[in-house]
Image (cartoon, rainbow, N blue to C red; front, side, top):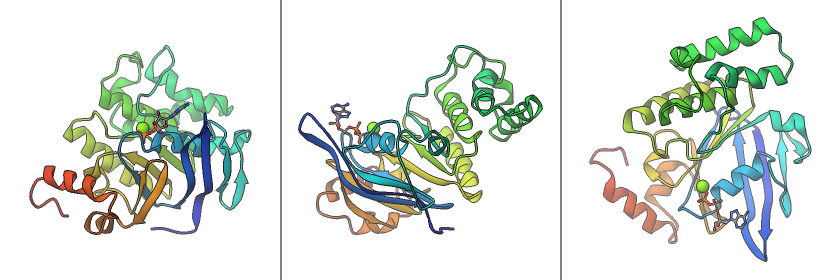
Length: 248
Ligand code: ADP
Ligand code: MG
């Protein structure tokens, strides 16, 4: 299900020490749409995600949320965009403490906070982790807790940096299933990956980024079948490692 763009970036450019790290980026995410930002390490994917999440200023370009221009000073816009970094950082304390914090900051009522945290934990199968120390979780557990922490404030758009990196096959599959559920609720998802097999099973649309620029956009199958020349070597490498019959 895709609709009007929820989120749109126009001409995003960021330059530091005379070097353009990202340049002229045009990207959009619709309601209930999942977009994969794919490209090799160093392409500028994490940088772009942080700029879109309004964590840092850009040199040029604009970001629109539901058609309204937003800027990095805009706290209420920031709350409607949830960023999950590759290595989540938790506060000292339990998983429950970390999950209730975003709601407490929004001054939600105590009963509502408890109900929401418990519901999300149950949905993600991590109820048993609520009393545990948030800084001593496995990679897969930490990824789920970070995702709940991002979702609990009911963002319009979820921005995920390399959400599957470092997870084993079953944790990866479980996370993909959870993200498909989130998508059904209308949340727009933009996630980065340097690994092509993480694009095909989840994304409605793929955006290929290389050396700070977008070089191709299209349905995942199309970018694999008809890659632009600069992306073709990466596709060839990925196909070499794909098991037979993986749907490509
Ligand atoms: P990706 O996530 O695609 O691997 P990054 O966004 O992390 O790429 O980095 C893109 C490029 O920008 C890299 O060459 C990186 O060294 C550079 N870069 C990122 N942040 C900064 C910064 N604050 N100062 C200078 N260079 C940076
Ligand atoms: Mg990165």
